[in-house]
Length: 475
Image (cartoon, rainbow, N blue to C red; front, side):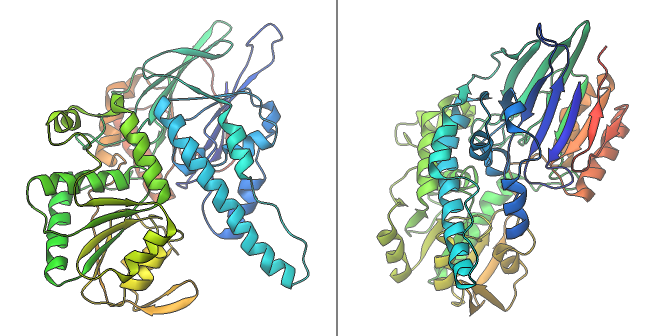
C-alpha cells in the first residue's frame, strides 16, 4: 500500500490523500482511493492554479471517500469529475445533502470570481480564463455520491472495506476506517477526518478510535486548548446585553455550516431562559438558510441534549424561534442596513472575505455603539484577521473605513478537538499503531501533535510535506 499526501500537508486547507492498494482484483491492477478532494484556500492566483491543476490523473482514481462537507475537504469534487473521474464518492447522508448546497454555491463563487478577473484581463487585452468549475459541473458531480449510514461497512474496491464512524465535527462528519487486504497482508487504516469535541451541543461526541495499524490524523489545534463551551455561551449573552444597552448592533461573521447553527442554538437556549434582551436576530445568508434546512432533516446526528430540547412542546425547531428571522433575498438583506435600534446580525463568510457580511461590516464598523463578534479562527491576511487585530482603518470593497466598533472574539465555539482531545482519542490505540501521519495543521501545531503521539507510544510518526509518498507494508 502506498499513501501520497497531496493536500492539507503542513497546512489546514485543500485536503487530498491518495491511497494505492496493490494486488486487488484478477487483473492485479492497483486500486486508487482518494480521501477527500478539497479546495486549497490562499492567495488568489496560487489558489486558482493549485485547484485547477489536480496533482494526479483524475481518470486513474477508482473511488473517493469524503469525511465531511466543508469546502476545504469537498470543494474541488466538481473539478475532479470535470477532469474525468468516473467512480463513486462515499459519504454520509447528511454530507451528501450539505454538498448539494455547498458545491453549487462554490461554483457560483468560481464563476463570479472569474467574471471579475476577465473584466480586468479584457482591459489589458488578455484572453479570458475559465472558472475552475461551473454550476453545471457541480450538479454533474452530485450524481457520483453514494450515501452510507454510520457503522455500515461497504466494499468500496476489491479487498477494501470502508466503515464511516461519527466524527462529531459538523453534521454528517465521519471518521473513515479502511480494512485493506493485499494478498495475505491485512492493514487497518484509520483517517480522523476533522475530529470534533466532547460535550458540544447539537452533535454527538466523536466515536472512540477503533483499533488500527495506520493513522492519518488532523492537527488543526495540535498545540492549543479550548476554553469550555459553557463560558462561550455566557460570554455571547454578556456581549449582546452590553451592546443592546448602548443601543448598538452585534454583527457576527459565521461559517454557514456548523458555526451558524451553533450560534443560533445558543441564542435559542438563552432566549428560552429569558437571558437575552428583547431585540431581533437575523441570519442573513442564503447558503446558511439552505444548510440549516439540512440540519433539520438529519436528527440521526443529534446528541441527547438536543433531542430533549426538541421534545419540549415549545421547542419543536431548535434552529428557529420567535425573534429569529432567516434572510434569503437581496432586498431584505439591504433593508438591514437601514434598521434602527439594537439587533443581532449573523452573516457569511466566516472570515469576512466575501458575501453579505462585508456589507454589514461596511455599514456598522464605524459606529462605536456596535460590536463585531468573531467566533471563528481568522486566517492571516483576511478582513476578519484585520478586525481581530483592531486595525484603525480597514478596506472593504476597496474603500477605507475607520474601525470604531468594539471587536471581541469568543474562542469556545470551535468544532475541532483541541490538543488534549486529539491525544485522548488516540491514546487507547496508540501502542497498536505502526504508523501515524499528522496532517491538516500548520507546521507548528502539526509537529507539536506529532511529539504528543510519540509520547503516547506510537512507533513511527511523520508530518508529511506536500507530495510526500510513503510505502506501508501489511502484516
